[in-house]
Image (cartoon, rainbow, N blue to C red; front, top):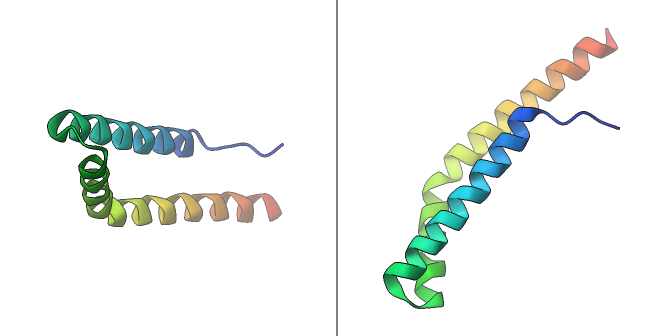
Length: 71
């Protein structure tokens, strides 16, 4: 079984927590499901560069670990 990085688990949990928090906030503020999803989409769009950056960092970390094992 492959080991999963604790940073990956933490990152995915934080992303999930952020999405749920933003959705609940928008739902309470607007009261409509459509506007809540629009607010969630706007919040997600602003974080896309962060998602990409962390994804690249995790990928590089995994590839370096894999390279060290194969040496």
